[in-house]
Image 1 (cartoon, rainbow, N blue to C red):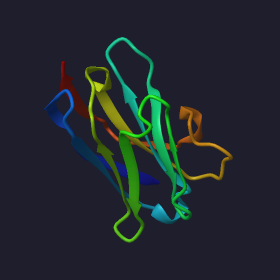
Image 2 (spheres, one colour):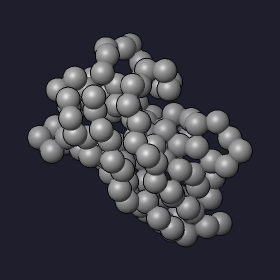
Image 3 (cartoon, helix red, strand yellow):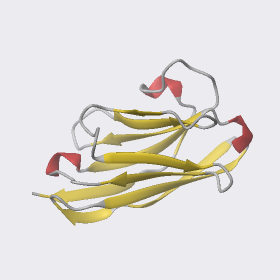
Image 4 (cartoon, rainbow, N blue to C red):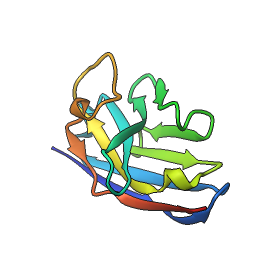
Length: 125
């Protein structure tokens, strides 16, 4: 079992920056990758970014490339998401997720086995 707890988020005006973090506990040695997804009201949960735990290779959705940066600290078992140049359409609940299996890609929900409770990010237009 892996437990994930998000922190950060909040409210910001368009063009501003926010960061969210995810702390993993439990059987963290099983983690292959961690990712961030988001879900806006009335929409499906969508992939934002992911990072392979050992190599640090990162993946981004086209909508956030160049604005968002994912990082991880393997000693602290945390994954962080720095969000810059935020847009109103980035408003959503952001979820941290952990995968405990190898995969060629980590951009779909079915690649992940554990989820955090979510944290709200609101960007005013």
